[in-house]
Image (cartoon, rainbow, N blue to C red; front, side):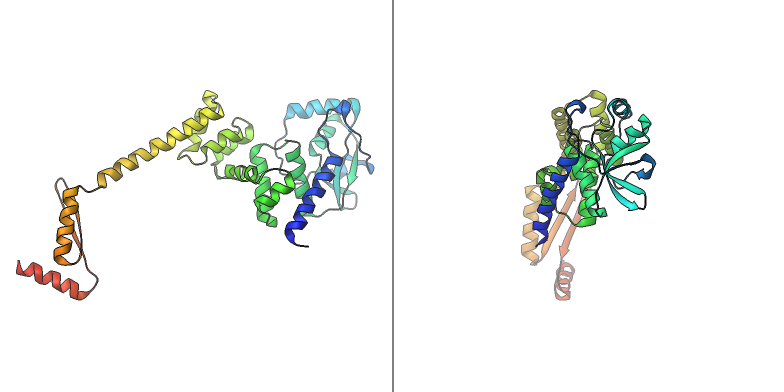
Length: 293
C-alpha cells in the first residue's frame, strides 16, 4: 500500500476515533462513552507535544463547576507509558478542570498508539473542536510536516480542511514574535495576521490594528497602503537613475565608433564614461585611439 493511500485511511480512522471519543456538544445533550476504567488522577500526565498551549482560566473554572455537579461525561483518552502511568492523547482540558474540581479518580479510554499517532490525534481533535488558536494550529501543522513528512494535501485530508487553509495557516509562522504573541492572545485574528505577512513592518501595523480595533478589511487596506508607500521611494529612485534620450544616443554613437560597449553615468557636477572590453587586443585598440588624440 503506498504512503498516500495509507495516510488517507489514517485520516479517516482518526476522524472516526475522535468522533467517538470527544463530541463537542453541551453537557445536557452529551452522549456518554463507556470508559475502560477509572484511574487515580495523579497517574495521568499531559502530553508535552500537545499543540494546545493556552487554556482560559475562566472556562476551566466553569468546566470544573460542571464536573463537580455532573462528573466527567466524556472519558479522557490516554495511552500507557509505563506501569500505572498514562499520558493524555485527548482531553487535557477536562483533566485540568477535574484537578480543579478535586476529583481523585477520572474515567479513561486507553489506546495503544505511538508518538506519531498520538500527535496526529491531538492535532485533529483540537482542530475539529476549534480549541486551538491560529498560531497553535499552524505550529501543529508544521510539526507534522517537519517530523513525519506530511504534505499540505496530506494534512488537509487528515484534518478535514482544504489545502489552502493549511497553507494560509503555515504563512502565519513567517510573522515576527510580537505579532505571534498578539495572535496567540486573541488580540489579532488569523485574517488580521495574514494581511501583515508581506508587509515591511508587521509588528508596527499589528499594534495599530489592535489599538484602533480595526476590522480585517480595514487591516488589509492598511497593509496594502503600507506596501505601496514603501515601494514608492524605490520607484522614484529608479526613475531618477533612468538616463535621458541624449545620454542614450551618445552611448550608442561612442559604442559604434569604438566597437565596444560604452556606458555614460552623467550627473550634475560631472560623471563617468565606462568602456567595456573583452580582450587585451580590444584594450590596446582603445589605448591607440586615445593616444592619437
